[in-house]
Image (cartoon, rainbow, N blue to C red):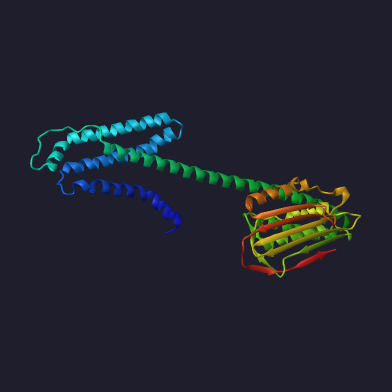
Length: 372
């Protein structure tokens, strides 16, 4: 039996079982009268009283509490409960009088005759009142707890739906942003070298296949994400001059393949190519990806140029980087660290991301690629 099936079984049968136990205790546990032969009318009264308590329980839990207490009509709720108690006590008194229970109970406790006096059942019974108030308290507590659980479940479902919709929107924003830049690069390359342009189109088609088919689920394998980043670097390297050195380091000695959010690493790499490349001045871009136990570390450094110097705030202003930070907040809450250093001593812009990822057993060969 699964946990969900067990919970469903418990929710469905726990309340009838509770009433069976309560009724058994009410009907059988009479410690003051075990030595007395009680009349059958007494047990009839006890059974009818139990039915009245069951009706009071469900009336309060399913009518009074939802329609009055939960809607803010506290005064009416208290008035209805008081009226219900008075009605139950009145019905209990009527049942006792119809069954002639006072006379029968007097005979049961005084078999030798005793004082001969006839007593009609009064409508007020302290014991019945206290148990009725206990029933009302339990039913109110049950209704409140069920409402709290329902509201909590509804909030979780709404938050999940909102997160899913927001992630889909963010990913939809990132993909066109990337392909817009890439198509511009290929267009410029067709004017210079047709063969390299064909290679770029082939690489782009491989990347589009990854985006269209491999990123439909919420996660992709890290090896696929790394290959995607490497294809992007290869595509960008086709249009770079010999003044630009690009270094891409993958984990050593092996990369443990783990699930990761798709297209999560690309915006950091994109930002380096956007701000760290110059057509006239020597420039360097370093992209390092490392793993240690369950932590994935991405380090991206690029040369800073005065005419295209990125401010620290710009990491949160571009479409891709803004959405990436938001995706990290949604997908890896309290599981990532992102630091940005603008203008280090070596005149570099540095981004460092540490991400706690799920462990897995697949491995792919290590590769360290350097473009110059």
